Image 1 (cartoon, rainbow, N blue to C red):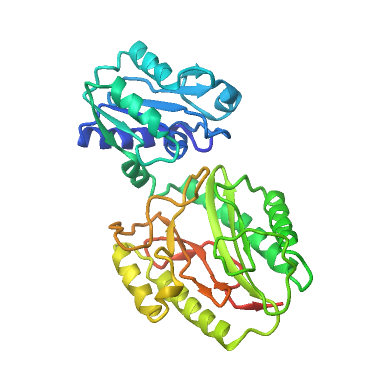
Image 2: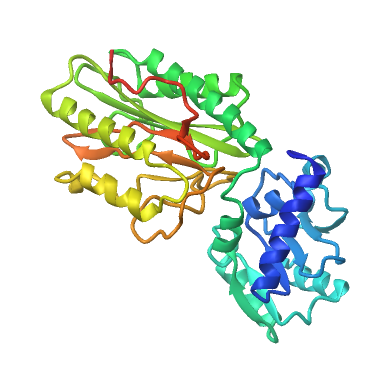
Length: 375
């Protein structure tokens, strides 16, 4: 298990308090970030339909419905004792309903599902709703995400280690960049360094973009003078992600690139310093909008997010630094701050760090220079 059994008990108690406050009698959780956080279960094949069943009553045990292929991983990582097997060829929803019936839980009046999760297929959601026809179905995805936002000391320790892995990866990428080297060789250096530093597979691909596409991955392009290479790397330790973004210019930067860098670096420094308890996401968004005024067409609407346990396809947490997010920062949150600019004459200018919100000044977890590196 990633943390002590006592911490899992605290997470379950927090979840059940939320259930009581919102009159939810039963959770059927298919999002791996959620069932990992509560049960410890750490699968690789998160495309399988697997469910953690959480009754509201404190004296009721949890049940994990685990795909047969992942049983050994379940035994390694999960504290839940009631594990029911589902085979891939079975009717996945019917198997869930059968387990609920065996547990005497089909009479729940209000049932929470991960309706906003990538991991609950729409067909399965419809079938569950039909099978639980007597119950009101509610989405609990955002609520469970919010319960995970403030990290425990054990989680922060994992995130610190993940930041070190990310630093090792991006530094290896910086060192590999040179004229005549392919973007794939840069990616290879990053992947080797993160693995050697103890990193696990990420929830989203690492990025090495020398074409100004923002989210581009290597295509075999040979780097040359004048190229701008943007890299985004995430360290992963026990599924806790901590990412870092850096940009390298081959040769002498143009006046335009130096201008973009100055705007990005100023926004990074000012917005990072603003990550303090009681500050709202709205305030951070307004600050960055002011600092990047005149460059709106070079932005893409979100310039940071919370970092926590993550599985494919994304490592973005429940808090996003963008318009419409109503979260308020609290000590123990870890936020990626990356107010970059893109779509600028074939260049992406991005510098980003993971930042721990503390009782006082914010703490940057990454330790790679934010100066504009020229190779």
